[in-house]
Amino acid sequence: MARHKEFEINEVLDKAMYLFWSQGYEKTSMQELVDTMGIHRRSIYDTFGDKHALFIQALQRYQLLQSQRLQHLLERQVPVTDIIRIFLETTVDNQALPKGCLMVNSGVELGTLDPEVSALVEGAYTHTEQCLLDLLVAGQGSGEIQADLDAELLAHYFMNAWLGLRTTVKTAVDQQKLTDIIDTTLRILNK
Picture 1 (spheres, rainbow, N blue to C red):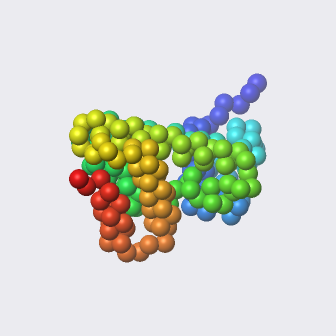
Picture 2: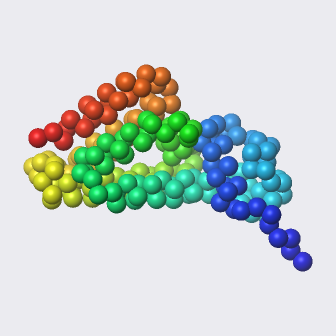
Picture 3: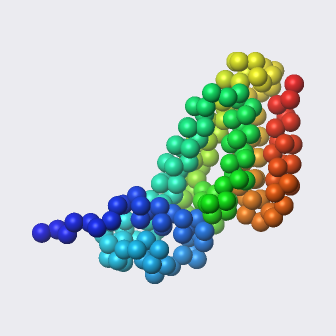
C-alpha cells in the first residue's frame, strides 16, 4: 500500500523555490533542499525527480505566482501609468523576498547552458512583455499615453527597464537611486 504524502506539494516546492532564488541552482545542494523543504531525500526524488527536475518545477511555480501577481495588478482600476509605476516599484520594495528575480538569476546562471531553463525564462519574459504591451495599448486607447508612441517599442523599453531593476536591486543599497531610475524610466510617457 502506498504511503500517503505528509506534506503539501506547493508548500515544499515554494521552499525549494526560495532557496534556489536566494542561492542559485549550482550553489544549492540536495542536502540544503532536504533541510529547507523539511522532507526526506527519497520524498523529493519520488515527488519532484532529481535536482534539475525540482529546479524546473520551482521555476514554473515562480512563473505562475508572478503571472498571478501581474494579473492582479493589471486588474486594478487605476491609471495605466500608475500600474506601470507599481509594476516597477514592486521590484524595489519587496523586502520579504530574496533580492532580484528567480527568472533573471536563472537566465544569467544557466540560460546559455540549459535549453530547458532558457525556454522557461524566454517564455516568462515574452508573457510579461505582452502584458506590458496590452497595458500600453489600453493606455493609448484611453488617452493616458500618447497615441503616436510605438506601443511595441515601449513594451520592449519597459521590459528592459524592469529586467535591469531586477538585476540592480541585488546590489544597490541606495533606495533613492532605484527610485530615481523608476522616475526617469517613466518620463518617456510624459506628454
